[in-house]
Image (cartoon, rainbow, N blue to C red; front, side, top):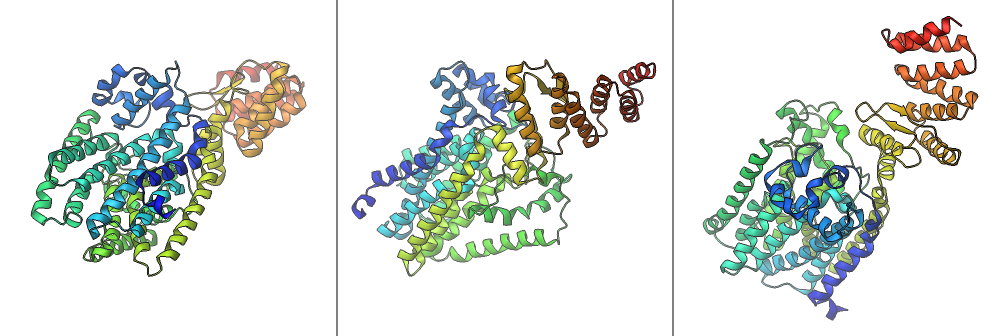
Length: 556
């Protein structure tokens, strides 16, 4: 085995096989959430002829969603669509692509880690090779990558990371010739056009020249200039297409308050890098949370963590056998800058934002393991950690199977996050056993009854609605739908029971009171029907339908 582990091809094969075994079942997953806008409904990806427009226009990559500019990702969507050759985008090929890009990123991490140690120490020892392999396997398995791997939308994070690592690898192999240097510049350009998170790589380049090629400050700065120029070119191009630098107004109302509210994120990100639950697909609830005071415990904790890591990185940089730890810390900090709301983004945090920073975290851990006096014990501990991460990832990835699973499980696990709950309700009403008979208004999300089901379809519809009510017992739209469904079947006693509950769950919904009044009227309970309409009139005094129904009842 030791002979095989000394062969690069064997290590690459091992990384690839581990990735396929761990994440392969995601190929059977469906499109979810933003995939609907970015892929399913995106007509721009249905022809390779649209690729030039993808790079020059905002519409192809952010139609119906918040403005973002990720042209490399969208162009690759077009390529996958063409390869599949089907008239509709099918999820399997997009999910397979994510798995393969993730495997490629892990293989590049292994190669880069070897080269970093070779540059730093003069050679890559067998212990260094094992540490690099463990870092790559840890990258494959860490559950914090589940969002990036399982969600097709996150292809931009995967491509950006692959090309950042490809650029770094070219720089580490560079021996003064023009070819590898130009390749590194090109890879960096592709990475930046994949996602703005890759832009800080220009600063990493300076660190690599200074600390690993061991050039002088002046030469390192001079060699970094072309990368800075590429980064500025990307920023200018992105600004021209977006028409603005920021993707949204400051989340906390003001720029300063938004930055203060970012500090509590530091501790959360540190926990997530270690693969420690809980995980959540939507941190948007933080937007509506009370703002933090600068001297609050959460903010001061974040400030102290940043200062502690910065001081540690600066101190460790002086020692060659600890420089990789310093490099890893700077890597994390630099690649989190674009999502730190220095330029306002769409949210405070997301787990996919850690995909690229995770590289630095694992490089630092690998160096720590090498520096321990008992390397065998450190390697065994790393193996146990990777096994735990893999088990957690296998459990975690299931939530991404389809939209119902994603939003229902997230809503139940994290009731503080309001958006998954509403998305869960929408996704349940979109199920084929319900959507022909009920739908939610696209703008107001109010319940709308369509044609009553046939006897053959009624049982499946009622079973699904009952299950949804059991999951969300306080959701009036499921309760009301059950009441209407039973009314359509002529089971008026059951209908009244459900409609009464719906009306009391959502007392300000006029339609609930109208439906309840109609059910009472069919039971000839005129008094109860009149009382229900009077309740509706109190909610909407000028509602003509309610006024007309009330006049009809009073005449009986």
